[in-house]
Length: 162
Image 1 (cartoon, helix red, strand yellow):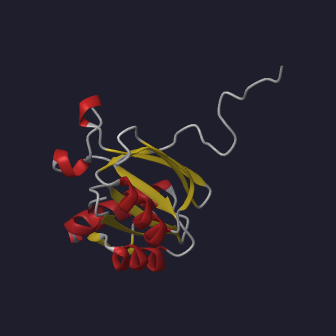
Image 2: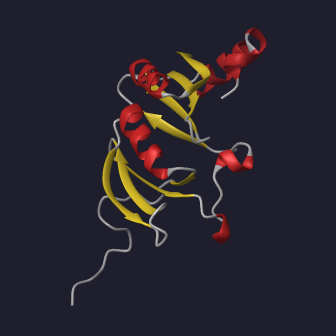
Image 3: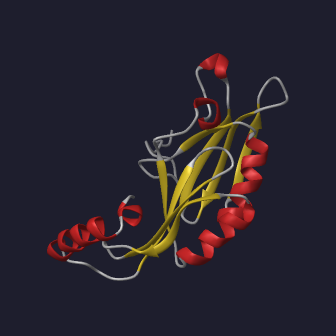
């Protein structure tokens, strides 16, 4: 008998599992917007919804399912929003941000240089989930970060929000 790994191959310790309204459309959106690759999908017994789908974006897994209110699975669009932001580090934040917007994401915060050393922006996907998109462009010491954060906060409250 072989030993089973407690964390399956290809997974990380933390893996986002999104609940959406219309998982089939969400899968297509994540493929167009973020270059997601579908690993597998299982239909629900009703034949209309997706019970479970597994995807990867870059080197990270992402799971998702349709909303199943009868089991307490509720999408952000039903709840009126989400307090969660999923963070993507990528080679070119500007290009991926533009790709996501062209695919149908709404701009929450345009990509700009941030005090912590990233080019960073935020979008909301059509299913109510927030995504931050970043490319690390310079290393910043903790002291410089504190100094820059204070200057950023007093100069521009919009870009100070992350």
